[in-house]
Length: 114
Image (cartoon, rainbow, N blue to C red; front, side, top):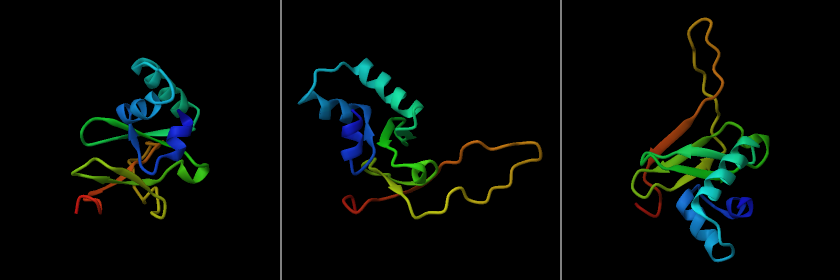
């Protein structure tokens, strides 16, 4: 499964991962969910919430991917990493608050949908 994520050029849904694996391996849906959760917990993959309420997954590629931005196509749902965007942005939180995670998603229309 990690190999599938590493080869992906964009974030994949659970269903897309399941389809990619089907030609090589008989695996049930629950196993795919569990392995994806495990990969995320180990920091080998990250999970992105789509506007359609569907999680998408990408392999992480070192510390540079720990915090970064994504572009999400509002038509087809394609999600890609934006590695050259400064994240986290300067955000002032109330006194006593300590942020632990910042997500930055740029939404628009991808080249294929334009």
